[in-house]
Amino acid sequence: MPTTRHDVVQQLQARLAGVDSMDEAALEREHVHVLGRKAGLLTAALKSISQLPIEERRTFGAELNQLRQRFESAFEARRRTLSQAVRSQEDDVDLTMPARTTWSGGIHPVTRVIDEIVEIFHRLGFAVAVGPEAETEWLNFGALNFPPDHPAMDMHDTLYLDVGGDPPEGERMLLRTHTSPVQIRTLQASPPPVRVVIPGTCYRNDTFDASHAPAFSQIEGLAVDEGITFVDLKATLIHFAHEFFSPDTKVRFRPSFFPFTEPSAEMDIGCLLCGGSGCRACKGSGWMEILGCGMVHPNVLKSCDVDPERYTGFAFGMGPHRITMLRYGIPDIRMLFEGDMRFLSHFGE
Image 1 (cartoon, rainbow, N blue to C red):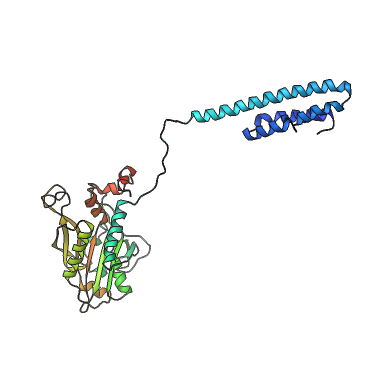
Image 2: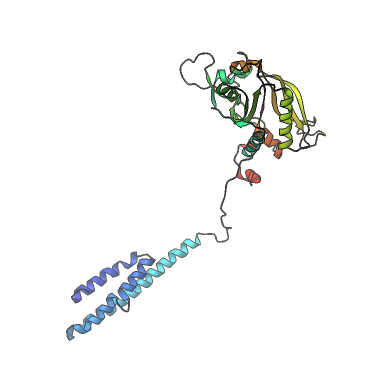
């Protein structure tokens, strides 16, 4: 306690001035510190009156009572101000709105399809192989038996990269148009037997419309060993169709052409929507194409220093986006790229 009347009054007036800036917790502490019945500053000051000369007691007592009243008024006013501020904040909240639920992400339907396809081939003994998305012209085309004048090598079909300088023939860089360069890399890295499935992103200079995208996923497969025949190719892919779609799925193979396989085929399944009777989705044919395949061309094996007289193999390639559209009846490929949570929420766990 200060030793004089003047010190006591001055200290209490200083504390009184700070009440208006206190938060709720500080205000309650100050109330106890000043007006507390046992050890409050005003309580102690009132008790000290009896030690003063008689002529000073009345004046000092009046000053302390006035300060008590001012403190009580200041504390009450500050409490009202703080209470009004809290109510004002509550008024800004719409209590009729539903509570916010915790949002959790999910697996994209294309990713789900890719994982399922890879798992089916994994059970058949295929390992997963991956490679870079920027490739040389040789690995993307030349090693895969594309002739130098093939239309796919034109700039209006393929996205070439400007890496500076004047690269030698076959060394121009591009964004891979298929995951097939990984087949070449795999065969160059290890001798047969080889069984790999290759998921990844590919790029083509396509218009983004209902059935095409400039960037899309692809899954390819490669099996090279002694004695592999077209029978092995058909058995493997028919097993995949029955595992992925249903055991009663109808499958057919149609002759086709790819530079990197010979013979080549397109694989169709019975239309999932009409059961083979013919509809708009299958254009009345009752069949839907899902992948291309064939026996690995001997020139491709030679490019990888694999003896085509000793080894044979098969390869296939499919588009997970297209298969996702077939499985879920999605009419427009752009719906798989838009990231619309209202659409994607239908594919949650």
